Length: 133
Image (cartoon, rainbow, N blue to C red):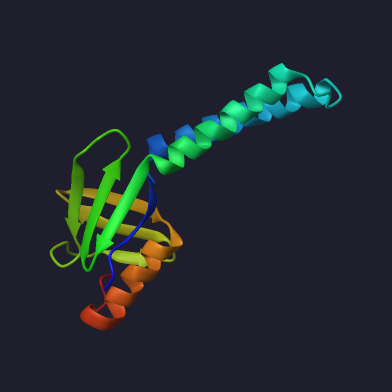
């Protein structure tokens, strides 16, 4: 298998609340801009651009690398990676883009980018062949 890289988002309560606040702030900017009759005023347009850049940072800051059954979860500006081995983690499953498993007594769920999800499916089909439910 060729090592691949992509992005992930944790699907926990804190992550979901963060994305909901991002959406609320984006909508506030769009509402203010629409109340100004969509005039090309620098303040609401700058605000919307900053909120959109914030979303890009929220996505890009969480990187994942996969090499065979090894997953390496990294974060921007942090040189350490969390290593997860699908060969040693029990009861893991991949539903679409969502990888879920239990590690250290804690249930974890991650949304994975398409190329990473495809790589895990390929690993499941070629090397594993068993159900992880």
